[in-house]
Image (cartoon, rainbow, N blue to C red; front, side, top):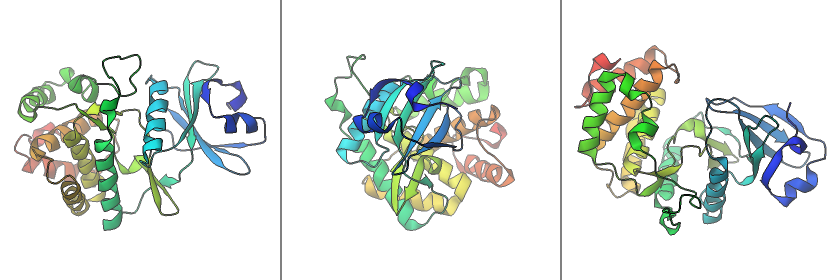
Length: 288
């Protein structure tokens, strides 16, 4: 198993450097699609070590800088303590340990989720000169290429996505999380923290919100999805327009991931997805 001292640290908090040779325990956590994750337990405090040892190769240096900036701004994200490379040249990121994923929903949690997502979208990333890609810690991507990879191989999805792009007029001017869902929200002692910023980028808050609402709706139920959507509209002062178009984009992304086996699904989830597709003016049940 990996040892902290064996990592080539590009940046490392001095507090960690001083205790690195003390006794600690590594506890594997549920891995993601992109990386292995483990809790690093010292006698006084725990941290999270994430190792990108799968196909994904995001820029963890930029993610470290983004998390540092968001932490300083007061947005509840995991505090970064270091990043570097393991002996196999896999990127690693060390952050604070902030609890376990949220599994129980209620109106208060949905309200906090909506407020935090709104704060993320209001974060002034424009203070960074994004024209200098080498210095920027938030980048723009091609929306379709990033969120719909391999869409061109699925003609039914590809056709609808490009029609929706014309209708929705994507605006990539604000910070988005890119995958805001319950699996990326952890809680401890009544405090909730947003984790996994691999997809953080300049983007459209309407898409970020729609993806989040869609996942709540299919995995937790339409009632929670509707309540969460109402909370998002309230905190954003009803600026999340073109909701059907962005709901359609969220659904299409999920269907594309589903075809590749990249998302959990069961009969109840599929029923909810079909119901959304049935009532969305841009979709049809044959997609499933």
